[in-house]
Length: 170
Image 1 (tube, helix red, strand yellow):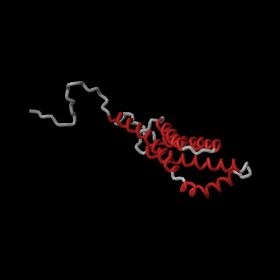
Image 2 (spheres, helix red, strand yellow):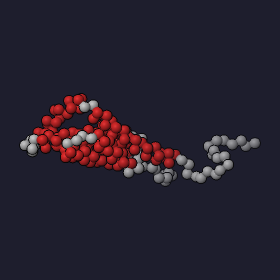
Image 3 (spheres, rainbow, N blue to C red):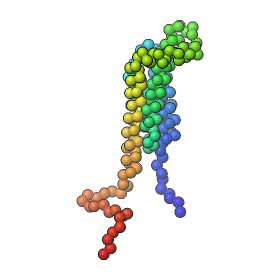
Image 4 (cartoon, one colour):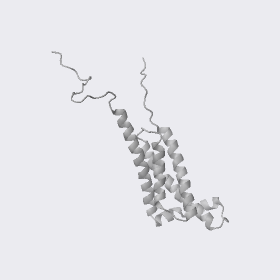
């Protein structure tokens, strides 16, 4: 005889897919913001982390792996957005004489040095990762506690019966 009780889904695969999509979308938006305004605002990087966290929360995850993945996706999205903003800024500064491929190569060469010179960027990337982690971790904890809660109502003033403990018969 098979057990017909439905098993809760972990939301791992949908969480990964949605998290990656949100990280790429957030990175593109952050890169476009940097290119258009020529400003690198760390709060927008944190916004990428919030976007990833909210997107991954939407799939109602229960897997304990997803908060850590949300942190990684958020950090990577913020870093990618900074990189894309650098590429867009280089192309914009050269008036379009430099192709995007050449700009990617140029920014890839100077990117590590630029990050070393401005460590605040790393701080905002870390805050983006923390934001993504916090949102998803809160949702995962709530979902796991809901599954662990007893499904039968408890009456006030009555001690619950433990059906797995042997009773004295005499």
